[in-house]
Image 1 (cartoon, one colour):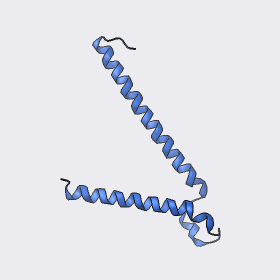
Image 2: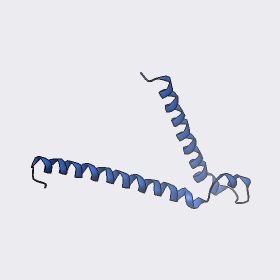
Image 3: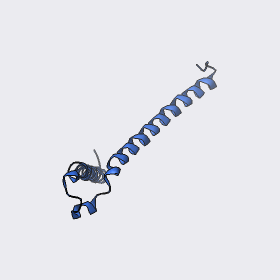
Image 4: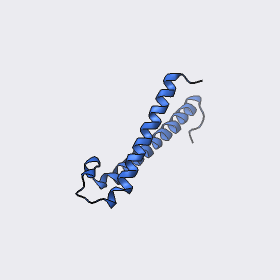
Length: 88
């Protein structure tokens, strides 16, 4: 059973992610149909960042995943080498 603090943290993180998703969705889907001189554009960065930020996030996640896999493979090979088992 989760404690009350864990439930509060999970719900707050869920609400934060949903708010971020809603903001990004409005930024991508609705701002192209609004005139550039409207004051709503003060709340959104340039459209360039709408594609650049997710692309960089995906690249960072991919790099971290590959580094983790490489670390696991190397550590397993070092364990085998320490036991006297052939490397490859």
